[in-house]
Image (cartoon, rainbow, N blue to C red; front, side, top):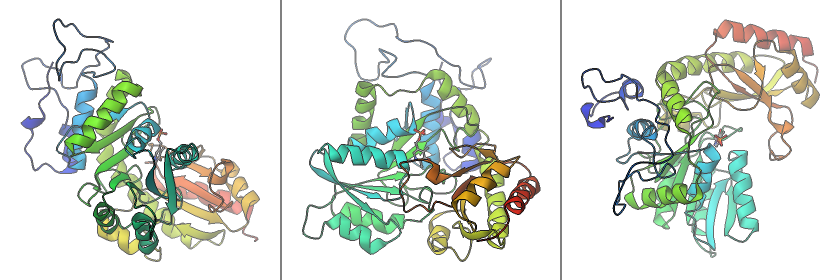
Length: 392
Ligand SMILES: *Cc1c(COP(=O)(O)O)cnc(C)c1O
């Protein structure tokens, strides 16, 4: 069973690649979709050499087409690496910080990544410097160390979760590389259709495949993509030895979900912009955070480095924390749940999580806009906001 990535012309658009990449070769009677290979080990004799499958923790043929597709989408020269979860990918990426080194990370990073970095730094593995990632001067000062040790890794997430701050990826990546730091960008919110961190100067791109890439809230998976042979070899070794591998069934589901990514992103982004604009004009909402709004502090930067603005937006409810909870409870179509990037619209008050940074307002709701009819989504929000009233 082979698939042939080189069968595709180089210049395919990303919205074609999501459909065409990672298909089996065109032999007569070949399946159109790659099969699921359920095997924990592979037949072999003699000395095991590089490239041998050998054992199911090192490789699985079901991973290959997905890893090839993710690489093609991010514009990398080497296949991606999938992991058992987004956080397993975070763990592998953080292992590249040398012991005693320095990691610079946004204060509003994905909460799990931040907790992991904090715990590792408390154990003395490395020094953690958290920054406002939208503030170039502050990030560059943390990178150079201003007299202290310079950074070994810059962690970027843009837009951030959930404050939707936009990092100046190109400028920050150049500043990081000037001090010899590896740049990792969590591209989960944007997807490779909207933002290409490798082209903007990042060394490694990280995805929670759980979100938009698989797109149906039925898979937990992560991925790392890089064009550096050295970094990829180290990350692959980490995955093989620490064992955070994806199941073949999940890999198959994720590739199946990826096929419709372009349609889902196009639809949900358009709806997010419509909803953000209407919510911005609503009395029950004191603030909308969405880089697609011309008044948003990240708008100019996002317009320069993204092809759209994503489909996560946040609102602050005028009545405060209790009113925000009441809005969530009054909704009928929107599902109250954590996570994002699925076909169904989800909403959540982020501070319901005890370890969410207190700099995230208690009345903030994060909306992951799905692919339902936008007027149905709006009517539901309108009726829920009306139930609660607009009193401050
Ligand atoms: C969900 C998420 C992660 C973690 O991914 P899991 O698949 O849940 O382990 C990392 N980064 C971002 C931005 C996320 O949204």
